[in-house]
Amino acid sequence: MTSKTPIKVKPVTSCILCGYRGQNLYSHLKDSLFGVPGFWSISSCKNCALLWLDPQPLEEDTSLLYSNYYTHEGLTNNFLTSSEVSFENFPKNKKIKYAVLVAYFKYPIMVPRVYYFVGVILGAIPSFRKKVELSIGGFLPKKGARLLDLGCGNGDYLLEMKYLGFDVEGIEIDPQSAEIARSNGIPVITGTLTKNTYKENSFDAVYLNNVIEHLANPEEIMSICHTILKKGGRLCIKTCSSKSFARSLFQESYRGLEIPRHFFIFSPESLRQLGKRVGFSVKKSFTTFNGYIWSASKAIKKGDKNAAYATDNRFIFLFQKIVVSSLIFLFPDRGDDIFVLFEK
Ligand SMILES: [Zn+2]
Image 1 (cartoon, protein in one colour):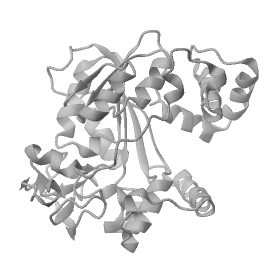
Image 2 (cartoon, protein in one colour):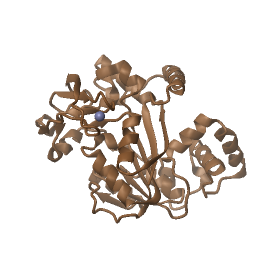
Image 3 (cartoon, protein in one colour):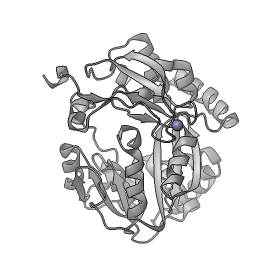
């Protein structure tokens, strides 16, 4: 069984951002989610709050980390796959989302007048408008704008962005997911991003959703993103946070550690600094509540075998959401998910 094969590793002793020698934060950790063998440590940088896995798996063994990973999830945007896409057939939450995008972000799609007014009213709530903005990567509409999703999975996000007027493409390391995306008309390259994959100055937008923390070379990948973007093009990065309240509370049980698949866990500031180092400016940066991080972290702490799929009941979820969101309002860099929108 591949799951019992020892993983070949290399030590990572210093911070990749500022060169400070790492301090051991947690040791003797095991993969409590998907059973990859081995014992792992997490190091931290006292200068920039970056956390990293030490030792880290060698590139040739990366696939062993994912042999028992989440099964391939179905499309949530399958209402966009039929040959005749009709607003009437959209789920209600999507109708409202698109109405907000039209009313506040001038997306060029048709929404019935009654929904337009619903969009105007609900979009007036800042947190709701932000949630909608976050869900599409914060990209503004531009006719024929070329968008790349790095780690596009089954193409769910790109399917939606295509509907919203973008010229979409993806890269995906998992051949099965890439094939699902292609079967829905999304052009996808199977593999990883290198400096020769795309031409310089050719994209208007690049999206990395829960991807950067899995990379062994985040600076190199961000630098390639900078190269392939046009001047004024935008890079959206979403990732978990080393500075979150959940990480402080749950420590080695924190879901975002994802031993041994998360190689680097950034703080909002360390991610912004890395972007600036490769040439970007920061357009937007905020953190948000993620209820799943809380339910899964609690399950890991309890030793739950199915922690990867943990959920809280609605009441507990809502209670946590109110408390944690209020704390994030007071301490904006300490939310669960980091969202940074960079511009070239
Ligand atoms: Zn550092």
